[in-house]
Length: 252
Length: 323
Image 1 (spheres, chains in turn blue, brown):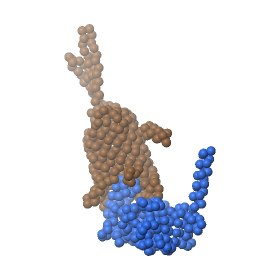
Image 2: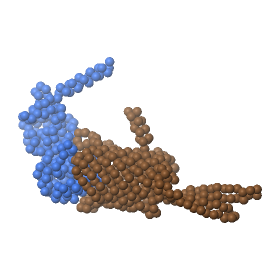
Image 3: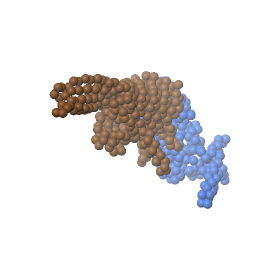
Image 4: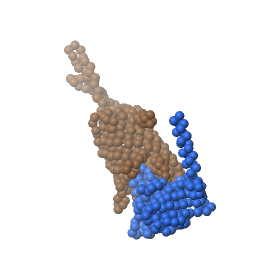
């Protein structure tokens, strides 16, 4: 009897949760925190599409409230992930709650940052496609706990800027060369190598050495390794790309 | 849960444990994130020398050896296959040497004679494997969701090596009064050692820090020698993050292996093996220099024996092909 009741309750909960998931093009954003009213231009990064051209600009809807109309693009609250960008703010990633009455996806972010923000400029010689992936961790202390997520973008001509990088809350990997969508590839972990004053210029050998170091220190999401095969493969791949140098600069 | 743990424990203790990875076998981790899932073949040559190096089964060879090691790895998507062949050259040859002294002594008595027989057996040299062939199959698998998953590797390894043994027999016949006549002969035994090992990377987090290691089980069987044996080992290796010295481009990697080997007596943990590897890559030439100090503390009965292994090696890829 108890088991049947338990199963019924579970089924009802699952059904209720399923009902709360909606597909919509309307997003409402609430930002909490005492500095939220100072935010001016605010953007949403949706489903990890981090290239600035793909950010969605939000319209003000009152103090600390914004809305976005995605037009023909829709999102499902069951799987869409969002993060916030503002002048001095970036958030962790959140999922939206569906509002069935007005068919909107509702988001709440805590304002504003938990560590220094940096815009990192990347320039590769000779120009070649480069991609980056940001492994964003949930920020501590949010009222609504965020989710861990990946945000990525590709600079097809080998140069671009990674905006609002907050290295205390995310790992940013820069991959040189074309990337296979099916098999994500990591690359240089920028967190450990960016310098605030000046431009870091790495030659091909320098890139190879930095990759060796991050593998040896276990910073590649695998056991620390001095894998000679991985080194040989790096030498081979960067040689084929004819990489001359990578310039990495914090621009503000 | 308890049943699952019991099954796992039974599996671990019954299958057998890892053959010790030779010091001169460099890391070959090449996960799908490095290859992009493309087929990659790498052939690597390793040359070097070592003093006090231990052979398989954590048994000291007790001398200086030189070695040549050829490792071939084929990686594709989440799997990797390896064939490795190594040749070790020791100072005094490769065969184990046993000396058997048999005495047939005639002792005259007042009412006849007494024949006394005696035998002493002594191993005067450990065997150095002449050549060793290793086949390996690895599987890379991700754990953890949300962000970038952790990539771990599990692998099975089969190793076969020839072990040569020279048995020198000395036969002494006679008596103390009339003297002994001595004859000797040498018998050559061609034996082999086979090892099967399973090992897997492990990962867990303590206080927000990643803790990586390797758990290994192996079984080693020796046949056709004067000292045939069968033993199993279960080991855990803690793989600490390396330290880097940017100015000199040196990397220092510490590891710590603890484990138990069957048929050695002593407590359950009868192997403690810290190691420090100093690594210097030369990206321009593609060569890597390794200097390894690996003191091995192994209990044999109630006594612990320490072997201070030191190895120097250089590895270089002779062929790299990305398909």
